[in-house]
Image (cartoon, rainbow, N blue to C red; front, side):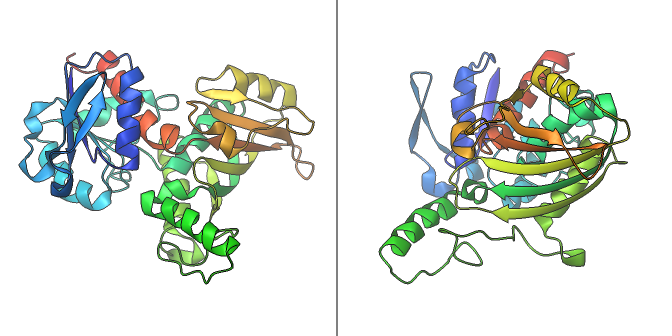
Length: 335
């Protein structure tokens, strides 16, 4: 199989390369594409050196499957052109709510992957949505979820490399008692929290919050009521989420833990003692979605609380796209 990555030099593009090195996909040739300023640079892949090609000059018919990891503006302009010659797995937000484009998390809604034939495009969900629906899916199958209330604690890597660099520089400035000027955030991010991700939309919500609401409905079930508060935190990698889930049915908390621990992509780490839970630092570089602090909601006998953590650059982005490609090749491509 020949594959291509658009945005190969960015955070998600580089993670995609790392994951493909470990993937079961047998790759005969990998095309690495980026902007003109990166043209000619070289990246190692499985012991070989691959030269970066310019997006403006690249022929999309070179590879039957192409990963887009270069942001919404690039996807808006180039995916419609590319999809005439290759199957596109797009990591941006641009096509997620298109009714003809499947929005896929392989552990959750693999049956929807067949829809890729509508436009030759598959959308990868928002990073914060992915880890949440991985944890919610097995619970919904067993207890029928009625309502979800989620508060996120999202790392700066979700915003890109420049915000990561800014967290480091602001931290140094803060410790050296220098004046802090924010470039990539609305307020100081070092030693602080910002309850604002993406633009504000209707009723005081942000686009990030609306993404979680609308994408969950599209992926999991349109009947689920969901409300979200998304917060940027001074963490480099991995998103954490505090999730309250209300079921239609009465449940046994031991059964909930058992179901989650057996579910694909999930790993329960939940001991009721000091340190008996997962944190963002520990989730970094792991393929799992970790679930801790699972407990009954003492204000509602049909609800639980849980703490969900995952590497947003892996399962929240690059890993999910590679898993989509693996599923596509196993179940649909060439059949």
